[in-house]
Image 1 (cartoon, rainbow, N blue to C red):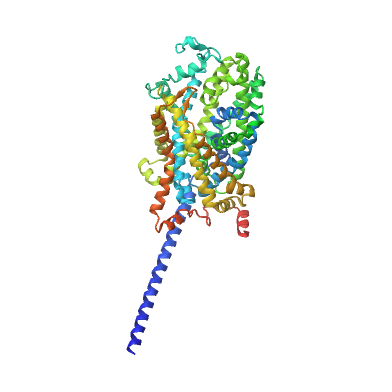
Image 2: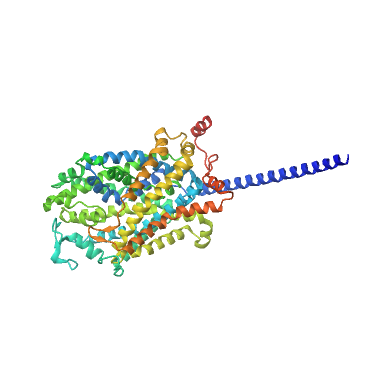
Amino acid sequence: MGVGADNKTESTSNDSKFALQQLEEKVEVELSNAEAMRLTKDDQQSAETRETWGRRLEFVLASVGYAVGLGNVWRFPYLCYRSGGGAFLIPYLLMLFLCGIPLLLMEFTVGQYTRLGPVHSLAKICPLFKGVGLATVVISYVLCTYYNVLMTWALYYLLHSFSSSLPWQSCNNTWNAVGNCSTGFPGNATHLKSASQQFFDHKVLEMTTGIERAGGIRWELFGLLVLAWTVVYFCIFKGVKSTGKVVYFTATFPYFILFALLINNVQLPGAKDGILFFLMPNWSKLLEVQVWVNAAAQIFNSIGISFGSMISMASYNKFNNNILRDTYIVSLANSATSIVAGFVIFSAIGYMAHIHNLPVDDIATDGPGLVFVVYPEVFSTMPVSQLWAPLFFIMLLCLGLDSQFAMVEVAVTFIVDGFGKKVLQVFKRKELIVLAVCSVGFLLGIPHITRGGIYVFQLMDHYTAVVSLMFLAFFEVLAITLIFGVRRLSVMVEKMLGKKPNLFFRVCWQFLSPMLVLGILISSIVQYTPARYGKSYTYPLWAEVVGWFISLFSIIWIPLGALHELWTTDGSLLQRLKKSITPTVDLESVSEKPSGESVALFAAA
């Protein structure tokens, strides 16, 4: 009996402890659920208070304006003729449909569904790669600090276009080195420089002999850089409400000038030769792997995948906006503009080749040299040059400003999304946050307007837009399509549009796009070449090291973000890894109700 009584007491005690433990676990679960519901409610309230585009057209114009930039004018035409002429259009269009359009829809989906900028949206989709979002913000902001220098140069040319005779027309100016100045293109005479080249080198830039000689600030360019950033500020200081109104002009006006130039140029003598040179197919080029890589890279860079801008702009959409339609509009408008720009540029180059009795190949070039040296020289020989020159540089300003708006907006969106309340306690108004972002961008742009600034510009462009970008692109595609998964991405699309993306998009996301991005990345590494300026200047070793640090400054956030996520997550290494690839984005409830068709289709599924 005694033993039996003791056992019964012990059993009762154990039962009490077990019941108490269950009660504690139940309370803990309920508190956890309550906290989760509170967080979800906070997210929804944040999404509901987020400003939106005034009209769908504003988002489309802003996206087209961002995608259609200076690269469409100076990069695509040159790349096309160097990579097989008309034959290059085959890999170019294939890459557009297999890589460009699917990945643009992917970024629009992420931005519009989460209604967050790239940093916080990617942190929800794949916490392990939350650093990718921050890296896109860094690379966009670094890019905008020197991209506005192009606007500074365009303003300088615009102001000088209203003189009675264009200043780059002759060799009779104080900045010309008369002994080696040519009023046309020097052709094979390597000791000569054209008058337009000397205007750019000696008057606009007052360039030194190398990056090691800064040479002091060009104060004229300093004032124009202030003006350029002031224009950017007043166009975006009210957020998408102000930007949405500005893009009605900046995104459409360049097309009027582009078509006017096309109509004018095709009538010039020699234009036909230039166009044929641009389009003449060299089918053997299709057997070269680099041509296909060039096509994919051009699509990727032109549309602006992995810069964070498309995610940021889509985050201001209404939840049910038809992003599929917008994706097609933006992608096709971007590629069509590139092709039209090719006709405009090479008809003018053919005309110059005819005037100076030179091969087209001696005049064709890419980069800033095309729009600030070759094309000004073209205007100097055109009828009514005082009309075409200002219009052309206004077009450049519009093309550049649209892209600049989007890149600056990425940084502003990151600050507001992540530190909105804390930052507003200091700055009081969002307009002052935008002012701070623009002011820092201006200060970081000053090294580019020194007399040695062109070398800094070229170094930054090479290591930011060439080296860093493909690393970011690869990890972004890896995080969204492979880890987050095509199934979840399809659910996002279905909740917003009422139907799942078709088989084409799902196959591209799952297989084709990641393979293409990986191929471009590997090719970029294998075929890496150091930065150069022109045909002869090579950078010293210390400058190359600085360039790699610039590149790593954006890439480093990817491993740092992953390490931070693993360090702050509880559990064993395997448990931490599993939690860090588990998305926290809510796929069950959304901040706005989808359409009736969407509800019916989702319920049926």
